Length: 442
Image (cartoon, rainbow, N blue to C red; front, side):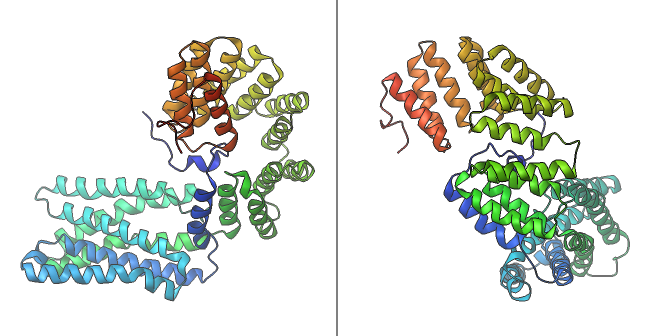
């Protein structure tokens, strides 16, 4: 099974987050995303943290430090004090927004140092570098794949992390094995750890250089767009972002989506028109305008716009899926299913398309296919409440009332959007099942 990007939900604005989750996540993200302190100071501090953490990590794995149980205990206590001081020192020297990066630096630097020292301890040369360099490659891939939210160029972050991590662990292992024989084991480990932790010298510089406040504001706006109650806050973030980057078409696209969620169709259309003026060949603003008409029940205009978007990009699975939704709402079920088929052929792991195709199958009376599509959607996205509701509709139509009631209740346990929650409750009521029995959520 291919690996899934754990952050992909951010770009899928169909994913619903409840009020509390949005507010708490925003409180965590906002300081980091909106840091306005010294970039040079931040880069220097994170580089120092990486070097120190690398030293501590390597010394911890050095056999010399474990020669005396009392000394080792005192060392671990000192390490704990140093690590606990990282957050307060970061807040004092920079500000609270950098504490996450500082703690993350400690974590990754210790792992890099551990890979270097575990390799250095092997007798066989091939085993030493297989562990050290191989561990560095793995850590570079994982760290490079977790791009900081303030960094716009994800490819640049990965392209830097992937070669630098194994280079630092490999060099640290080589130096420890070949150039530090006259040193005591603790001192040798400290030098090797500093070399491994030196990974964060260029990476901290890259973080500071690529920090983009407009991009940070856009990320915060995306978070807010996962709940319509926060759409006004998304607009406020995007107003600030556009003031910083007035020619960034993606910012207008996001603000158009925010205005659409606020039912301000005129401003939404104006922002999507601005994106089209900046990027005339992009289908996304035309698609979003079509979706806005779909939200407001203007089905013929929605179909027209979505078909236009397909002329610009016939291989966009999202456009096919949205056109399928518009056609289904208009009653053209065969064409709707055909477009869902296209969407799934382009993007086989597309839970929304499976769930929407399921509802079209349900409306056409093909209940077994509807259930199968919902099961596939729930396999791809286990907490997809809309798929659970559509499965319940189909099961109920098949006469499997107990299974349908269970599926409605499962949907209610998935923290669904208010609309999906109401649909599930109506489904339970139609089945004659009590929504407030022991198995239903309170």
